[in-house]
Structure formats: C-alpha cells, structure tokens
Amino acid sequence: MSARIYLNLFLAFLLVLCGCSKPGVVIKRFDYNERYTPSSWKKIVVLPFTGEKKFRRTAAEWFSFYLQKQPHYSIITPTLAEIEIEKSGMNIPEKGFSSQEARQAARLLGADAVFTGDVETQKRAKSPVKILIQLIDVKTGEKIATHTIGYPSMVFLWDNFQEYAKLATDAAGRDFLKVLKGLAEGRWIEPPAEKRTVQLP
Image (cartoon, rainbow, N blue to C red):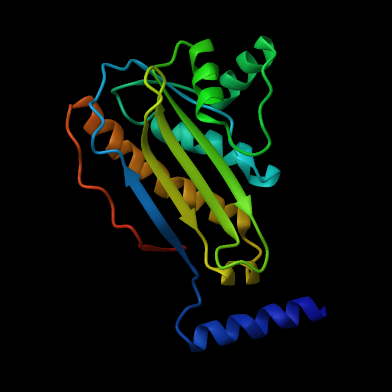
C-alpha cells in the first residue's frame, strides 16, 4: 500500500473523529441588484465558462442543463455559443469575460441576457476552489446577480474535485432557477443565505 493511501486513510480517520468526514461546500456570497427592473426576455445564453480547464466545460454544460428545467426562457447552451463565437472571430478569454465581451457574444446569438462563469483553483488558499457565475442584461449591461462559491481548503485532502464542481454547479443552478422565476413573474425573491453548507451525499 502506497504512502499516499496510508495518508488518506489516516486523514479520513481524523475527520471521522472530529465529525467532519463529509466536507461541505461553502456558498460564500449571492448578490442581487435589487434596483433592476425585470425585462421581457425571451432568450438567455450561457457562455463557455473560463478558468480551470479541468472543470470549466463540464460546469458550464451542467449549469446550462439545470437552467433548461425552467419554462420561462429559452436557454442557449455553451456549446452552441462557443461555435457561434468562433465563427465570428471572437476569442474566448482564459480568465473571465468582461461585461462588454459577454454582451457582444450574446448579441451574436440574439440573447436578451447572458450568464458568464469562471472556475478558479489555487493551492494553499482559504478557498482553493472557487466558481463565480454572473447574470447580465445584454441591453443595459447591468449585473443582475452574482453567485460566488468557495471551498474550504480541506477539500484538497479529497480526490473528488469533479464531484465538488458538480455540487457547486447544482447549488448555483438551484438559486438561479429561483432568480429566473422571479424575473419572469416581475418580482424579486428572497435571496439565499450568504453562507450555507451543503454536504456531499
């Protein structure tokens, strides 16, 4: 048995003893622009996520799939968006679309609103894995909602980063489904708690 396996078993044992054998996902912040007046949108595009290459494509597609559960708006997937962006000659940035770039890409697809996402990893940080998702009005450029999810550093003791990325996307998807419902109905909903913990199954 390798030293790595022994280390993982020992760390798992310590976590069980302290009652934290299932590391949680900390949702750090969810901000609304409460001054925004809901518009008569029809199409929303989810742009390809930027940042960490291992997780960004999967996170973007899963988030897009989640949004398609709502009946209010037509969702344009990241895959289709990427094809149209490349056809136009635009470049997809490695680190975050600016608001202007996101709106320009959204106009190519005839979208009224646009989601951008960025996946960040950084070792030995308080939150070594972080996902940032924003919803922007294409016409006005207003940032309607921003979802920032950070992971506690203990997650790097667990070789399950893909599952954490999926879990984070699930959390963002659930909250943004509520946002889209509120926008479609011309009202604001109660935002989720600024911080909460979701346990892995």
